[in-house]
Amino acid sequence: MIAVVLIFVSSVNAVDLVKIYLNDGLNAVGVAIEKELTSKDFWLKELGEQNVSLGYYDQESYIVVTNKTSKILRIYSYNDGVIKKEFEQKDVITGLMGDKEKEGDLKTPIGFYELGTKFKADQYYGPFAFATSYPNLLDKVQGKTGGGIWIHGYPLDGTRLDEFKTRGCIALLNDKLELFAKVVEGKKVYVLTEEKNEVLAKKDEVASLFADLFAWKQAWTISDVNAYLSFYDEKGFRRFDKSDFSQFASMKKTIFSRKEQKSIKFSNIIISPYPNLDDERMYRISFYEDYYTKNYQFKGNKILYVKLDNRGKMKIIAEQ
Image (cartoon, rainbow, N blue to C red; front, side, top):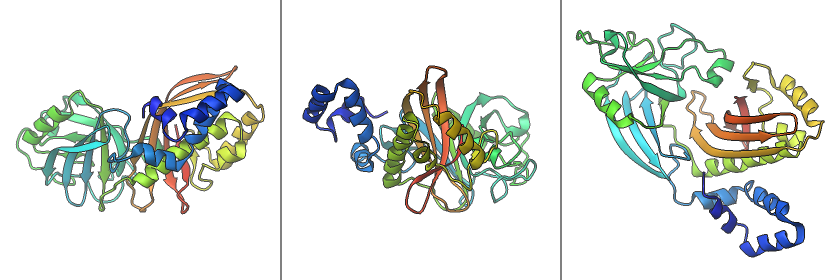
């Protein structure tokens, strides 16, 4: 994540932090810094000239972008706000148009996924293949089914593939697949699949999401249940167990009523644009969470699927 030292010396003046420390102690300094993290202007300043058009990534990452209309697959590297094109193949073969809804519909899913490691498959899929993480949590809570969505090659016997025969996968020419493998080897790789328009993140929106993420965390920390629940989409939210907003809110109100003292830390934050056919401004946010109360502790990765409402506020639609 953005260096902690920058947080100290950016929006909050060091002299002011010293005064807060002298008057109110070390804990008050933390409170002041946490407040700054809920400011959109703070994050706009921190992002500076970074290119976040494909998202913000805490570490070097590679993003495979496939457009189902143009039939172009590209790989971009992202490193500290610098994006470079590393690979391109035109005329890739994808599944049928439209978002994948159910097993056997032959459609390539539209969304944002992680790429698995290279593995050997049947000769039908070329020399090797890469699996994607479809279905992700959002797919599952929306009732989408199916699996086995891969990036692979052409049959080794020379058979010609088409959009029906890929069964929803993405097929590259075998020599291109070899190059693809060399580019992504040993890298953290994500797969972004769009249908028509190019899906790009906006710096203004990424800054807003950073601010809202920490405002959500702050409400969670102090057990302000109304502020906390205001970051959820009342109509569209589904928990991983498919419970709806009213069920989720009832549970959280019970938990928050205990007023437990909490320690919550976020690190390794990633904010990525999420393609969809409804032209909604959607993002996938992942981070490492370190959560502590007297009665419960959790350390692990967390993923939010969110959309921006007409005021630009983060609304969580699925949470893992």
